[in-house]
Image (tube, one colour):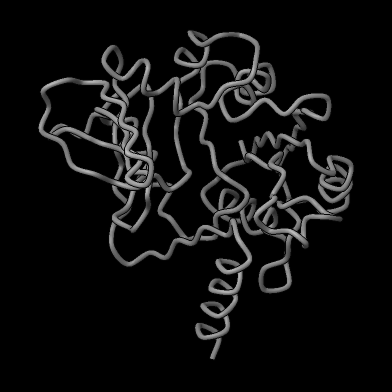
Amino acid sequence: MIFAAGLGTRLSPLTNNMPKALVPVAGQPLLWHAINHLYGYGIRHLVVNVHHFANQVIAYLAQHQWEGLQVFISDESDCLLDTGGGLVKALPLFKPEEPILVANADVFCNAPLDKMMAAHEKLNSSVTLMTMQRPSTRQLLFNGQGLLSGWVNHESGEERIARAGQTTHESAFCGFHIIEPSFLASLPQQGKFPIMDAYLGRASEVGIREFAMPPGHFWFDVGTLNKLEVVNQFISSANK
């Protein structure tokens, strides 16, 4: 699944007339880059949620097709459901009993999704979260076994502890997660809520594990105009 429903307010004025997912990077929409990334790792069944300028995203997907790729739309036009509610709404569109790989449309990277999928299967996790060491006011806390143990916001001072008394390290979330259907089935089946709240609420009960992105890969959040410029400069330099 690709989350493509966000309002993209931090990319205004670009998003005053288009959805964030269609903001161009190196001549192609962010959504194009996200789909190509997943497609390159064998993904052939894809759900895309829509809300802000939903018709533009739907029209783009109808006009641009990838061989063998089935794309299903989870329409949140009436109400934006956040990440948790959006996943639950999309449940009927996923392949039954298969893990769900989730990505954000506003991430530009070459993260090794095959290694993440292999780690998820090997450890028999309920959820696997891709992380990296990078500056961020919001950090996830993991214990020595790589299990999610909490969350901290260094700007506001807010902290949520899911596993008390654990020695932890901090890692920043990269926007990629793999979720077992059984985990989603245990969540509230309607309403708006962030999936990270659900992860923290269940972390002491189920295996929610970290997959640290290996060195040698690039990753960019394209959520603001400044970050968009950084990505374009990176691509320009790489192409010289």
